[in-house]
Length: 523
Image 1 (cartoon, rainbow, N blue to C red):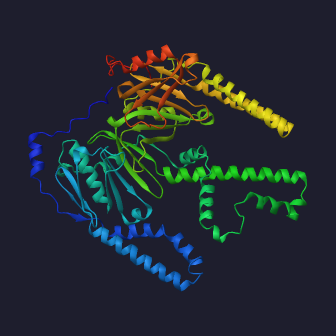
Image 2 (image 1 turned 90 degrees about the horizontal axis):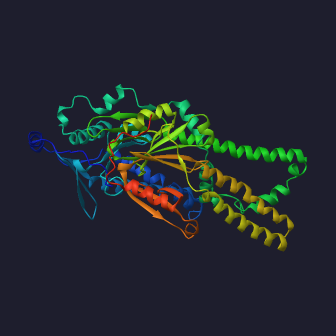
Image 3 (image 1 turned 120 degrees about the horizontal axis):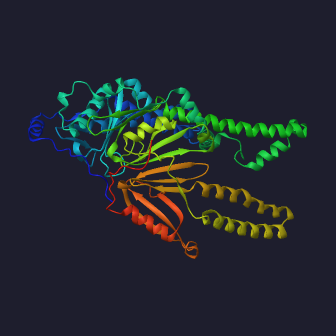
């Protein structure tokens, strides 16, 4: 089925004539401070290269290193200034024109009625200087199609409001109060204080800090002793350490637990820090001017301000886990045709929220939660026992070969099948679906639990497939495609009886179903 029709953005003839008669501004440059911002960004990317030259080619000669650094600064600033001088833009009555390029000149026109999303992004230095980056997305390339980096914050907000007002059929000159001010005066749909961000960070366990340190160490390995990344070097050093050899068995066991505990602490700390950097100041507002949508602002070092039109929301996903669900915490995301500043189409709408906080957001997006009175259907039990049999067979063969050829201790490998089988069984228990008159609900995952809520009017394709292992059992997998959905991990209902899969497919693609009918769900 095709997506719902786009809102009619055609203005009346009188308004259109007034807009056509409005004078166009001259081509203008970005803010001059953008030269400094871009130069600092490029120079920071070459600091490691200067360090490598200092310790290798220049043999730690500070004079040569300083001269090379000065030449690099002059080159970067000069080229950046030249690029800035050749980049101009013009805001017209119905479009924005961008001219860029040093040798190959490029002239691009972006009509306002083609712009699907306008987002503002402020990095830390930009926030201090009162600048912002404006990103325009038309939906033609999966990311932003025009970027103005950098404008004064007031100019960026005025451009965003102008495009939004144009799409609403209004003249920007008639707007006395910008949307950014009016939305601040209203209570947010959802917001997170520091306590809530800390709770969200506890559930985002990550070893990204160790990964960053390892990456830095690998780039500066010439400063590290030989064999630093060789585990055998560390094992030898520890075995020869008198202080460790003199410890009792109890002390060694305690030390091992302490080391594991330190890794766990680093994982939790990394998750909390990462969440604070990404979600600090999280606020979600309802926007009614222009195309109705959700305005999201967040970020500690890089503040992003984006609006996601409601009509571009394709599906909702509620993510949780065994522990998070026990305490009632969920992460709401919207699958949208509009990409955020990072290019992602899975928009984090409520990173750490209770069901009662999520309900009004879903209601504004015209998506209902499943009523408790409606029962989900499980897929065929072959979902777990078929894979379990294969794993038991493989591990049994490996255990027998290694046990007879190497050591009897390797017979214990077969015990690995026990936790794997348990996990498969738990995943089968969670893999459920439910079809109502207006929506389909799909549960999947045991540790990373996800509930996808997909309005049937948003469905683009429905495929029924069978693998070689499905044919003997007469099973099939139903794959549901939506516009803007992930081609890597599409929405799938696995291991259904073939006849039931074909029946579900027919129901989903049935054009006679009334998408506006009241869904038998409750909030």
